[in-house]
Image 1 (cartoon, rainbow, N blue to C red):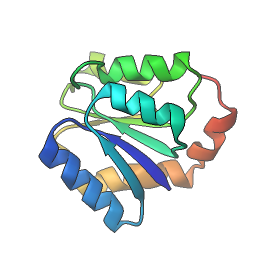
Image 2 (cartoon, rainbow, N blue to C red):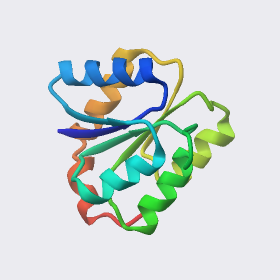
Image 3 (cartoon, helix red, strand yellow):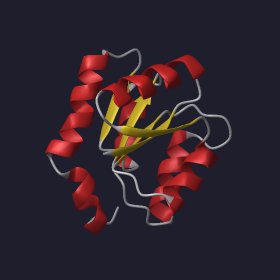
Image 4 (cartoon, one colour):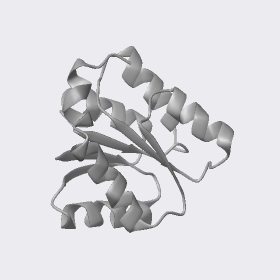
Amino acid sequence: MKILLVEDEPRLNDFICKGLEQQGYTVDAVTTGSEALSLAATESYDLIILDVMLPGLSGFEVLENLKKFEIKVPVIIVSALNSSERVIEGLDKGAIDYIKKPFDFGEFLARVRAVTRKGLSRSFTNFRI
């Protein structure tokens, strides 16, 4: 399973990346929304893990652009913006899950596995947001 990780905080980016790789995932890690869109447009991913507060394009803007350019890949938001309004906004913009920071890494991995188990990454090729 190939994952695009979009997290601008270097230590957290490194921690998540290493943890996913230890679980056998292939991970491309970037720190900006622009980099995320560029890779999502040119590479094939099974999942995008997306922070909201990013330099340049926000995670919500990335979601909107993924939809606009018909890039169909499931997205899990991981964000410190944890009010109900923000969670609802992220889900309404197309994310399949919203994990609030700080988070338990075991629970995070379980949510990533749920995408695979449910076959969401494969079904998104026929899904129109």
